[in-house]
Length: 475
Ligand SMILES: O=P(O)(O)OC[C@H]1O[C@H](O)[C@H](O)[C@@H](O)[C@@H]1O
Image (cartoon, rainbow, N blue to C red; front, side):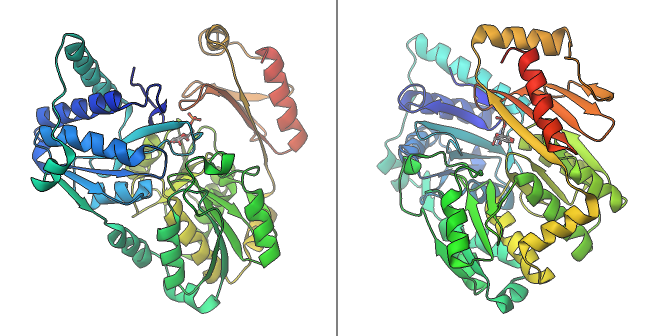
């Protein structure tokens, strides 16, 4: 069964990620496009470096072509944000990206984008699921999904192979102050995590005359045996590299380059929360931008503090970038992002973009003339420190029901030593304390995990509160 989660459809290759399911999903989207009378505009499709990604696009193209829908096929493995950019810039009704983002190598998947290059929202993915159910029904009754063989589709110009990389890169270059970067001669270490960011990032940084050194760049569909997700554990080699080579910054991106991970000049892993705070602070303080910021329920409240100090507001939304981007549009926010590592900025695409975020961070180092570690220290001095503890738990289906009942239906909470200001059920169960700390327990929308995040002014309290929840929910 094809089900869309927080970040598109994800499935194990050979289990549910199969030619048959890709054809069903494509047929469903084709019918949806026809019913909405947008089929004549065509669809842009891209893919990452995972096993079967390119083949999956070709299988999808065969179905769209049989429905007389033109496929703009980006025929090089590409960053997800490039596809989102193309859908936005060329006012296409839909886009598709074959990727399982940062998930393990045995997974693949498909992200669907809608007008404006946005992640399909829940209403839209539910509709696609309904269309898929109808396709499945017709197949079960002996119906067939028509296809046009790939070569013929190309010959009939129903599949147009192209590569809009320059357009995407140029858009970033004109948004970033390349001249200031050019003067600084920065040394940058890149870790694309065997994924798709290296061509775009290397090109942008070389134009800005940075010295770029790359690790983990070969094509390895097993991602070196690690998760292509930038975090403190997976970026150890980048950390050593930055220190050994005396780099100004280490930049990593996840498998499809929409998320970013950063190592500072002292070899420290900067949490995505810190990156968001740094960039918001930089855009408002140094570039003079005005406006609020947007974060999800599981992202640092330091952003609220920074916003308040500038007389601005910070808006909170459920987890999922679609919520971030629509709130950003509604409030004309400067920046929006998530603790999972994705962000975008006003005027750029409506999805997260690790490549753009990297370029902006490098601009920040050049414009401020300060080391990355120093800017982070300045912020800590001004606003104080705050600590986040993150924990993930596996569960059985039975336990999931019980946990859901306790937290979301019976609305029970454990005994905690801090005064509770309010409790929210916007996404999972989030308790806000009146010392500006908080704790949230929510089921992931992308993995079979329960996530508990806690942020407190004292590191020990954050860990202790997680333990109290663990005990309470018998995790
Ligand atoms: O915590 P989860 O529901 O697994 O979501 C974690 C992240 O997954 C994907 O990358 C989504 O695009 C993000 O918007 C989300 O923050």
